[in-house]
Length: 393
Image (cartoon, rainbow, N blue to C red; front, side, top):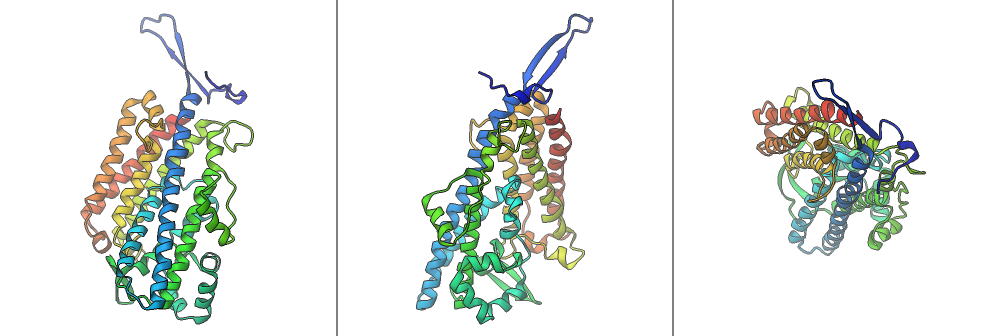
């Protein structure tokens, strides 16, 4: 049975399509319940795409946190921890994967609570980090307060994924810059570095849990304990329910069309960022800032990041699981050619990005990078100029 809300008695909710024959015969009106069609897509989007992705990211963070605790313990005992460093690298990569696959839905809590810049700002402030590591007063505070100090007292360029990346992956210092090799860092961290790493990861994991909580309204007991132990208050947004209950009392959304438009706007935003900034700045490299605007320079996983950003669009548009209703279903019902065009643009964008070799060192003027930029820009264009207008009709 269709669920009809009082607000739904408008053109935004029910589309009327008039059809008549070429001879001027009687017009037959066919009604299509747009709100009902879009409503079906929202619950899978929230539960199977957003909440599931953030949940897996937080799970990987919990594992990484335990590994970093063990690393610090072995540093203090002067025991070998080479295998632990490799395990921590793998956990960082997994956590990073889920973060990058979430960037099409940076709308809501990630933006409103500044979690995005908190955990994913780059480039790392290399000089400030060295000063911090050599400051006994601040290092003592980090050792005592852990993630609380890192989260509250350090700037964005000194925490999050990339500060953690620098400590976990090997790099070579050349001309005052740290150039990554993509290999695990040797098991020779100083005590200060191990303390700092643990503080960064504790804060990073707490932020991941906050994202899951803000969308789902709850987390596991183990995750809740980490927040409680760190005296971190969760955000009571319950953003997923806000979307699922669009049009009902208490929801910030009036219609499911509004929700769908925001989902696609998030896809447009990340496509533009990947094309114009993440790949575009290093490709141009006319300034030092552009040259150093490499997203994951120490792990050398930038192109993996970019491809996962496009997969975040794919999951938001097409759904994450087989059989999920999605915005794609609605677009296909209105314009099958447009839906096919979007899906092909997504596939071609991933393919073009994965064809890039050695992005971290060879991005400037690379024909492969230019081809990927153009392909992702085309994806942004079709989402912005064709999908959004169709949704808003």
